[in-house]
Every structure is written in C-alpha cells, then in structure tokens.
Length: 399
Image (tube, rainbow, N blue to C red; front, side, top):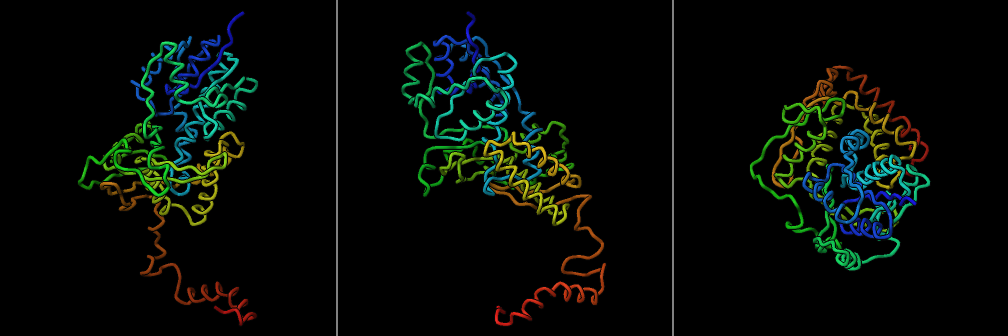
C-alpha cells in the first residue's frame, strides 16, 4: 500500500523539525512546506530545505505568498490604519492566516491525507491554523504532536538527537517572529508586567543620530513613492521605509492584549515601516476625507483588524469591509512629510491635490468667505435649539 501523505507547515524551528522526523518515522510520506509571507531570508529558506531532507521529508517546497499577503490583507490594514489596541500592527496573526491558506491549498493540490503544524495548546496560532485547515481543506486530518502530547523542548531535542539530527535549538531568552509587517518579541522581561525590554532585546538598533526627512507618497491610499522614487512593487516600498525607519530604532513598543482563547498576552515588537506608513496615511486622510468618511471607516477598520486577529479572515463580511475601505481611498492622494530622529518621528505636513484644507470658503480661525456673520449667528442659534428646549423644561438640571 502507498504511504499516506502529510503536509507539515515547516518553519525550521524545533516543533516543526520534530514533527517532520516523527511522522517520517511513523511511516508517513512527509511534504515539508514553508509558507513565506516575507519573514524568511534566502539563506534561511536554503537551510530549511537542507534540514527538511535531513529530517526525512520526501519533498520540500517554499510557498512564497508575500505579494498575495499584501494584496489580500496588508493593503486593507493600511487603508484602515489598523493597530490593535491603537498600538500593535497586526503582523503575526495576519501572517499566520495566509501561511495556513497557502499550506491548505498545497495540501489540496497534492492530495494530502493530513496536515500537521507545530503549535502548542496555549497560544493563538493553533486556532488560526486549525480553523483555516477545517474550512480550506475539509476532511483532511489535522495532526498536532506538540499540542496533543504536551511535549517539552527536552523531549523533542532528545528525540531528534537519538535519530541523528543535530541542530542548535537552545532555548533563548527571547523568541522572535520576523515578518514584512514587523518583528514580534516574546519572553524575557515581558513575563513581568512591570518591566520593559532592554536594548539588547531588539534586533535593530539606532545607527543614525542626525534628523532626516522621509516623504511617503500615496495614490488612492496605496504607497506609490518613497522620497520621490516611484515603486510599482509595494513590498519593495515597504522594505525601503523599514530600512529608513529602522536606522533610527523607530517603531518599538509593547502591547498587552486579549488572546483568542481568553488569557491576556504581552508582546514586544519593532515595526518601523508599519508605524511610519500608518501614521503618514492617517495624516493624509485627515486632510482628504470628510468627517463622516473618517468616522465610519474607523469603525469598520477596527472590526477588520479584530477579525484578522481572531482568525475570522474567512468570515464572509470581510470582503464587504474591504470594499468599503477601498471606496474610502479614492481621494487619498498626496505626499506626507515626516521628520525622523532616534527612537521617534513627527508628521511635518501634507501636500495633496485633494487637500480639503485648501477650501476657498474660509480659513479656520481667520476669515470666512462662504457665509455672512448673520448667517453664522443664525446657524448657531438653530443648532442650540434642542438644548434650549431641554433646559427650558428642566431648569433644575442646568450644569
């Protein structure tokens, strides 16, 4: 009989390395698939491939979904200025969803009998992977050895060593998840809610001291140029902004949030590009959107970010929200000027052909041109009518 096929969502870390070897030893044909959303370097992918075959995989593939991730998620997070708890760029959670979709798609293509991943039972990723697989690859068995057997790091390392695979899986003080939309940091001082991360916990450090100006140009809400250089590839534009901001250590912070399973979680991060892009985009929208466009866009964008985090990307309402976010960007055009400095930045100004500040009806605090003083007084009196009615009846409630 032919062996059964299992696709392992392979990151190259301890849990997925153990999974590949154990399933191989148990008689499965293992297909190791690394879904890359922009966080793996070419060298890391090469090492993953080499190790996958050493661990016993019959085939290794890299599934590059970085541009798909941008087109189907990142773009809308920029449109919506999405920051979880007004703080954290939704990086890991949104990346995991697209990694899971890519793995499920590959499993369907090769006719896999099962999909395996290395998530534990204490985090959000188990939900993101399992839910996506259940929907995208119905009927395919889901295998999670680390979760189901409650394996310790020592047990996994010992098993690998006993079967001739040696790699440095030393438990580090900090764990990192690097992606196109930022780097998350877990462990160390973050386990104590009264402490922050020290300098050595960050992967990128301040390399420039002198202030500089960064100009980000948007066309219908999407990045079109950086410092006057046009980019058709939005991923390359994001990487350029990351390079500029990371040299100043911009984008560092810690976030405390609610996990899907109900416990609180604390994570540190460094995300120069997301912070700069989102704040620049927000500034441009203040100049180019109406009051109610901004208000309602913020409402649906908050839900969009929450659904991404909560593993609800496949919820049918998401395309509806994306349609509203896309429509809101039709006049979000122009260049935002930022001043960068060590560990911080500020918005200097906006240059846009759609700038509503350029109205000829008046300059705020200066002079009106679209109405007379008598019309202003009439407007104010009519606007006060509901309050005058209420307090005329309830005189005892006046504040």
